[in-house]
View 1 (cartoon, one colour):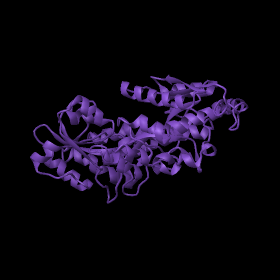
View 2 (cartoon, rainbow, N blue to C red; view 1 turned 60 degrees about the horizontal axis):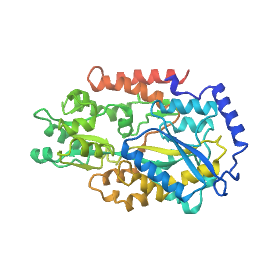
View 3 (cartoon, rainbow, N blue to C red; view 1 turned 90 degrees about the vertical axis):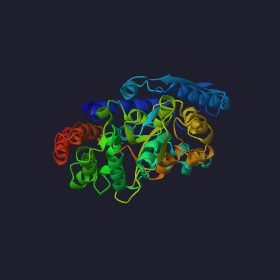
View 4 (cartoon, helix red, strand yellow; view 1 turned 180 degrees about the vertical axis):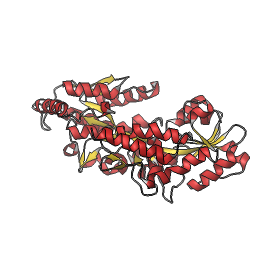
Length: 417
């Protein structure tokens, strides 16, 4: 989509660079903006909203920060709708916050424009960058430069219904071939074996399992024979085996709901499904496991968000102190303490016990080998075209190779504009 390539034109880039240069005049790393002096300073933190529990946790973390830094106050702005569109407008207009959330999916485009402050020169040994899960940190780096530190994440895990597994006499699958066979056994009496979300954000790691590349040289490449070969079994599982379905096939809105309603014996979901099931379907007995291996390799997806600093901020020292606290051990422990989000620091995950948690341990285990949902500035366009056509193949309306080749051609026409 053209709206996603919002900084690709020279005119917008020039406006942003101009704003950065003017903003930097009063905000060098050595400036006295209240970070270490006695002067009081207010910085702005912007992000999207969360549930009431998450809101309370963030407030607790910000209160702890302000107690530790009494000369720095934080104004927290919640952007409820069209978050990135609002941020783009503010960045162009020179009115962006000092610190803000950035999803890994959007990070490459923003990094390329120069609107983000490089953070490596602020980092001290005590901050311990090596404590972050490597794939999550790398999502906010380019050419060895770090532009954000991840605040939380989720990977994907296999959620399985213990009662249905016991009744069917099957074991939790450890390979995708086993999953396909188990799905056939579990599909009966109005229950489908596997719930599937037929979209690139969930399919990416599978699509590349046989050596293909979804994105190659910044262009769509999912029409490649290796990608099609990797994805064909999922399509066949729905249309030949009749043992897989998407949520809408069974009258549900998403995978967690179809699983909670016991219309699917297995789904592949993230950490967000755990509190949902606890609150909405407390009587469902389930377990989680690392995703079955694909082509012999462990694989999963990871979705992560970082705190980044506006390069045009004139309060850089104070802004870094906020990022340092929120992504440091103390702030991250507060934010992730209830398990709504997982900590990107290995030490915090261990301290909170998530690496041994009944439901979250498989999600934590996947962080070290996950494929992060991020790959270049054109991924939004590539994703949209993939999703538009893959679902038609998943529903059996057209051959997979035909659908993906057509979608790839359309994506690359849009990218080439």
